[in-house]
Image (cartoon, rainbow, N blue to C red; front, side, top):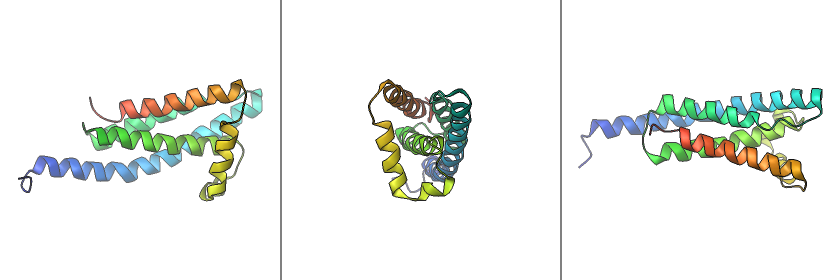
Length: 142
């Protein structure tokens, strides 16, 4: 009977707190990572997708500190929010305005660019996949 189990109640409350904090952090970190990648890309002419790994790690640390959970649901939350972070970062790094993030056609464009052909898209997929993996592995206390 878990009605009077206060430890479980506090874990549920911390998870419910980690969700909105994680969403806000994912949007802010995605925007900052995208702008950084855009500035570096414009000045050097090269893409800088590795910044998403650092942003995903920061997101995982935020979820870990706020949630303080050991369950796998914290890892799943970190992975899902890291995917959102990567999509926002890639959209901003393409030079799209922040208001375009509210249109679903923006994400179709981002996925078309990412899934295009060439060695740059393969590296982008590897960096973004590793960013999601990093957030998944570090979002909970192990």
